[in-house]
Length: 453
Ligand SMILES: [Zn+2]
Image (cartoon, rainbow, N blue to C red; front, side):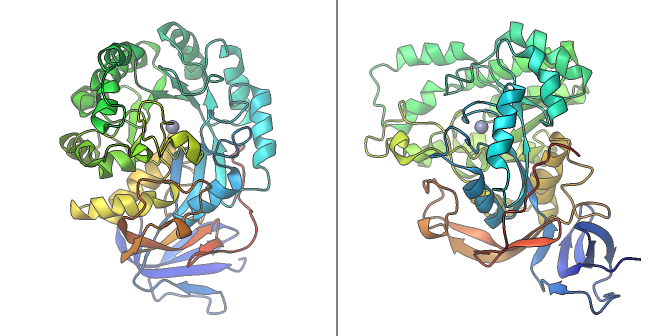
C-alpha cells in the first residue's frame, strides 16, 4: 500500500453523522480512512493536530460572481479564490454573468476558462446561463463542463445577460431535462416591481424603506409560483437562488412534499441583517431581492431547520466603490450586490449557534447541499472516505472583527465591516494541500478548474 501523505486529527471532526474525535488519513489528495483519534498508524507521516478546533469539510460556495474576464475591476479569479480560501471555502461555482462575455455560449465559456487558468487558489466550477435564443448552446455548454444553468426572470443588472420569460423557459427547460441538468432561477418578476416604481417616484431614495418597497415580496412570490408550475410541467430540476420572501415558504414546502425536483438557497445577509436596522444611505446592504424584515429573517431560519431551504451560499456579488454610490447613498441607483465570500462561514455560525444549531447542520447547508446542487457530490462536500481532502480547520469559540485590512476580495466594501463575528478559519486544505493558514496563503494557485469529473 502507498504511504499516506498527511493525517489531520482533532477532538471535533465534523462528518455528516457525528462531531467527535478522529483522524483523517489522506493520500493523493483523497480521504482514504477515518480512524480513532489515537490511531496514528504511520508515525512517520506528517500529522496536523488541530486540537480542539473543528475539522470540517471545506465549504462549497455555489453562488459566486467572479466577474472575470470583462469586469475584472469588480473581482477576479485570484482575489476571489484567495478570499474564499481565507473563509474556509474549498470549491466555488462561478456565476455566468457580470463577466464579459457571459457564459451563455461555448466560446464565452472558453474565454472564461482561459481567464481562470492558473489563477485559482481553490477548486473552481462554472454555471452556464440561459438567455433568450441560446437553447442550442445548452447541451454543448454541458459537454464543455458547466455544472448547470442560471437565468433571470427580471433585468439582471447587466445588458449582456438578458432575462427570460415563460416562453423561453418552456423551450430551454426540456433541453436541460434531457441531461438531468439544473436551472438556477433569480426569482423576481418585473410586474410588481414596475408598479412599485410608479408609486415610489416621490419617496426618498436614501431611505432603506423606499428600496424595500421597490422590490416587493409579491415579485418574488409570483416568480416562485411560476417556477413551481414550470418545474411540475417540464419535470426539469429547478433551484431558487437567494430566496428572501418568507411568504412562499409554505408553497415551497408543499412543492417539495409533492416530490417536485426543486431546491432552495438563501444567503448569509438574509439570515443576519434586518430591514429595520439598515441605516439610510447604507447602499452596501443593497441586494436583490432585498434583505427584509426581522420577522421574515426568523422564518427563513425556521425553513432551514425544516429543510424547506436546503443551503446557504454567499451570492458574493461585488463591484467597484463608485458604483455603490456610498456618498449619495441612493439605494435606487446603486449597484445591487453584497460582497461577503470570505465571511459566510463565521457570519452563519455567529447566528446559527445562537439558535441552537451545530456544525454538522452548518456543514450540510454550506458544503454537502451545494456540492449536490452542482453535481460535485461524489467528490466534494463532506468528510468521508473516497472524498477529496478539502478541509477547513475552524475555531468556533474564537471571535474576530471584520476590518478592511483582513479582507482578501478586491473591493473591500461589505456590510459585515465593523462586526464581531464568531468562528475563525485557522487553516484551509484543498485536496490535502494546505493553501491558507493563520492569515497567510501557502504555495501557488493550484486549484483545479472542475470541467471534467
Ligand atoms: Zn447572484
